[in-house]
Length: 195
Image 1 (cartoon, rainbow, N blue to C red):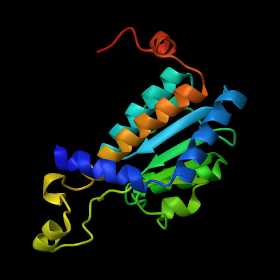
Image 2 (image 1 turned 90 degrees about the horizontal axis):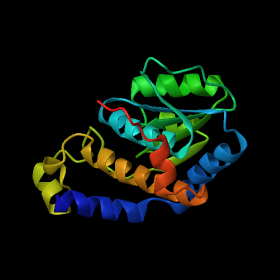
Image 3 (image 1 turned 60 degrees about the horizontal axis):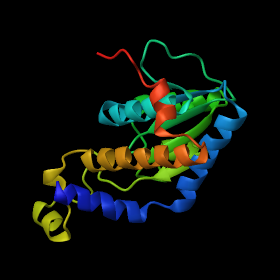
């Protein structure tokens, strides 16, 4: 846990403030100027689970938030936002969905580790989140240990997903301040019937 937490702290120092500010600005302006608009969060596998948690908090903040793959996802269009979460930025299902969102003229926010990835290239806003994705950049086990890369402790895309989860929780906290929302405001919208 300490190794993973240390990675997240280092990653937080590498995230570009201008990218974060742009994402928060887009979401804040959307809230004030397009309350009937929709936010569609997209991610596959564990990135999809992180996206679901973020979409839930967006709902608590008062957004019309949906998750790709659920049965109640409406059509999106040019006044809507799509948020694509993909560490590699090339996950086929999410890339195809991102392309469809762009064709529908939605604003696309990409959260990825690679600014030169296919998803990032078509996005209106890119936030780079450091983190090992499924494929190691360095296959040599001993070299990874010397470099302090904790891949054996966090397999596949875990570091990206953990860092993205914490990053998006930070975005929610920032949006709470920008939208002047209190925990009581969120509690009113929080589910009162849960499984």
